Length: 161
Image (cartoon, rainbow, N blue to C red; front, side, top):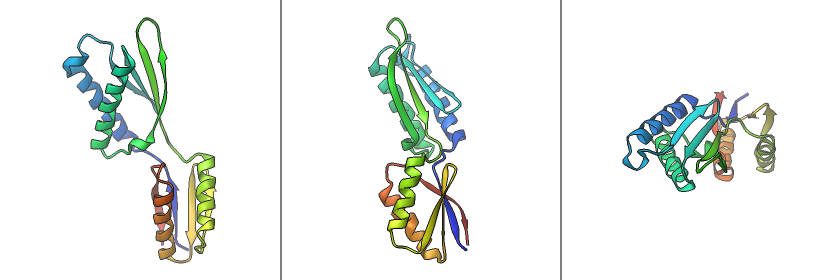
């Protein structure tokens, strides 16, 4: 029976490369000379450091540009609050979203069920498996999910025929 998995996983190698490229650009740009502007990646958290919120915004713009060049969807980024860390320094932590949250998985499952297509959706950990009798129905579900779940960077893996 044909099936596919709906997942929400970034390519972490490309994210790391984008962060490294952004850090390299921060070191060479004239407007960041002599400031504490920095960007680093640990696990699935990107930390932005700067002297002011305006500077953090500039660093984030650089990061978004680098991610876009490397074909990583910026919807994977989950911005945190700007924190003061002593003196005039500020920090912002951006989490890289990985996996489908349980409420989003339930929403996807409800969407598939309400579509009246002859397919079933089952939540499996941090992905949703959609199974159906016809390949055309599965492709219709993919189009439906891309249209109605636009806020999530969904991808479809493990397509079996």
